[in-house]
Length: 159
Ligand SMILES: Cc1cc2nc3c(=O)[nH]c(=O)nc-3n(C[C@H](O)[C@H](O)[C@H](O)COP(=O)(O)OP(=O)(O)OC[C@H]3O[C@@H](n4cnc5c(N)ncnc54)[C@H](O)[C@@H]3O)c2cc1C
Image 1 (tube, rainbow, N blue to C red):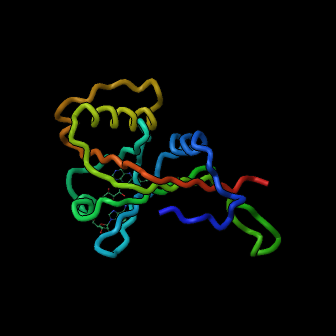
Image 2 (cartoon, helix red, strand yellow):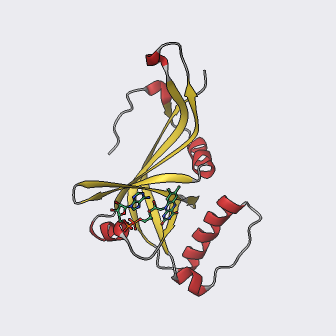
């Protein structure tokens, strides 16, 4: 549920800039809730067709959690740099950051899994990456789709 941002001066509302941040960052943090216990994992990801895609092994704790609670928060940061100051309390960081909230679930369709894996690979290996994933390659991974229903952005830009 939307919560007002305390630092309105740092709120980032431009969807195109949020998309750019999601395209630029290679790693984000997936936050899940394991029966009241927070569980946060660093993961690679790719944004595609208005959703966020992740891939993983076919078993493990996060997949066990998702069977019980599919709600997720995904956190992404780019452009981090230290802000220095002669005063300790003047130190900080510049950054651009996006949070996405929504339901995350495994993708069944081999076609959609292939598109997601290709998007992930293009992000890491570059736009020229070309590979048609075989059915057995696709069967060996779990692809997760985060259908976010809310996203917020925040930026502390260089002075
Ligand atoms: C930069 C980066 C990128 C990554 N990208 C991906 C990715 O794209 N896909 C992917 O599947 N995995 C990725 N990983 C690994 C990921 O963070 C998890 O370790 C992995 O997904 C297994 O999660 P799980 O819940 O199935 O682990 P399980 O092995 O089932 O977890 C069991 C226990 O191991 C511990 N554990 C699990 N993961 C970590 C961790 N990363 N650090 C410390 N303790 C841990 C926890 O205490 C957990 O309770 C990445 C890790 C890093 C650092």
